[in-house]
Length: 151
Image (cartoon, rainbow, N blue to C red; front, side, top):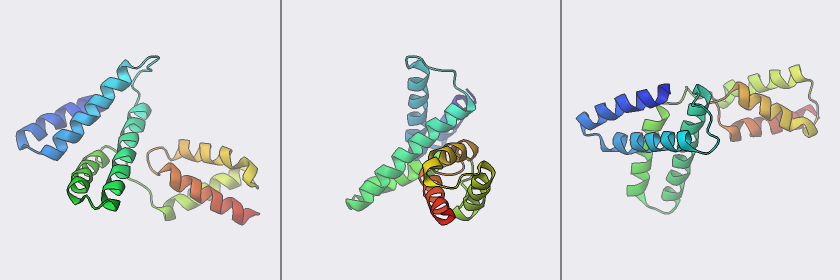
């Protein structure tokens, strides 16, 4: 619920400033919140669920940006980049690979995992611990690398 209030305040500010990129993005967030709240079997909007929602929108935006760049659609890529900048304001600071690697290495040691068969356990625990601070793809790649080194 906190996210919705923040979005509404930022939406008002963007309207006053006539910031089109912020308006587009904030309206998209507001729409995603409304959809999430009215889904069948919808849970209450917790901070964790709000974070997942923003991460999903950010991922979609990054994918669109990459597609536009690969297709030489600079005008659409620029719009997507602007929207991505607004979305990233809602996410916690992202950890670098150098910061994530020791965290995952210590988790592997704590859990006593020694082979690739238990990779899913480590990835699940790491995703929970690093929620919003690191992308799932990065976590997965590091876990795979560290478990192949352990062998």
